[in-house]
Length: 183
Image (cartoon, helix red, strand yellow):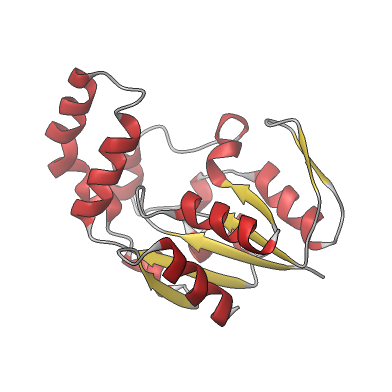
């Protein structure tokens, strides 16, 4: 059996960056939550989802769960969106924003890591990342709405399910070292 390491954190925490860096460092397979978005189901309105009790099962990522199951059993997985073949490795890294709270995928994870980061830094990273694809007006609108949606980014319940909590302000090299020491 292969070991699957799940990495959670808010948008802008550095999940994708860390998963990619770890994968390169030890030549490990990797999966990204966002790569399954177009074939998965998420709540249409995140604020309603949050205000109505945060049912994590509302995120139906069955294809990602299937991918984890296949890779964990040491079989090659054909990604239906990326149209790539992912070969299993002894350790597999996956970014899972919802961590252990998302039972559908969590049941295949052996070790959970949560990247903890101040909300202001995460917001800065998000703006920098989305500035490449959004207009100035769209960015201003996001900032205008931030006080209303801010509560979506406080993930204490997800953080509690982690086996290891990392400080997202540390360098990527330091984060890689901490992960490799702990898995």
